[in-house]
Length: 160
Image 1 (cartoon, rainbow, N blue to C red):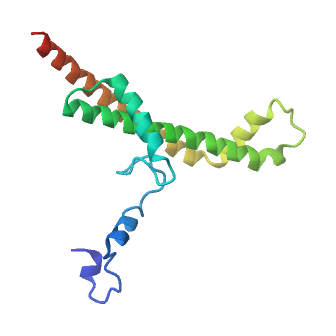
Image 2 (cartoon, helix red, strand yellow; image 1 turned 60 degrees about the vertical axis):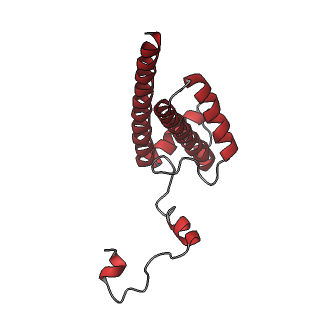
Image 3 (tube, rainbow, N blue to C red; image 1 turned 90 degrees about the vertical axis):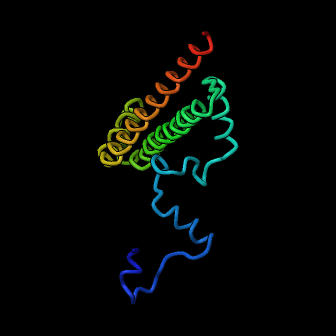
């Protein structure tokens, strides 16, 4: 029973149209590092497909199960690349936000000092980003291990 069904006077019962349901399915998406959506609406699907095609060629899956693990590897690498992009963007944005507050500092030291200020001001965001990256890296490592194990078993069977 949904919360709306448990309260008879509740004004909303959620989206009813296909468009509304599709829109509401994106409500919880904040950063695209977790969840079902791999390619964000702001990203180019063609670039993602080319990225996966290149990785798939290197991974060389031959069976449906191998392709599934290879796809997991690709999706996870896409997300890891996004996480690294977020980190770079946070630092770049902070450089512009904090550069004025560090007047008179040696220009060679300015990037390091602005990065420190950004980290200091946003340490929780950096910690969360690091946790997401660690989870993704473990997921990717496991997918690659399973893929390689399946491929080794297949090749051993083919050699007999």
